[in-house]
Length: 87
Image (spheres, one colour):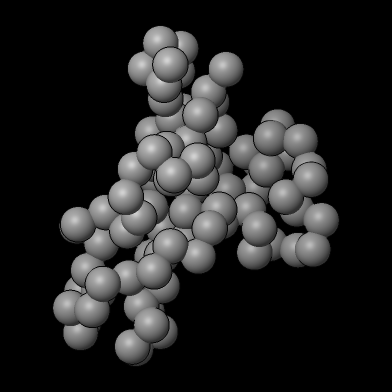
């Protein structure tokens, strides 16, 4: 089983490096990128989503970070934890 540390609150969100490159405001984690494709995209099999976003869902969970000040957004590939790392 694989686990996203951001989705499950195991890692602080946003990470310290997630500052807006334009206004230096701390960016907000808006959740998994797949939730923004269409209303039913969170319920699609990962095999289909991998074709759309070109991300290996066995390794990464992609989150969308957005600057609350200027609106800039950025993808963040969060490595998934496996096995004993999250026990």
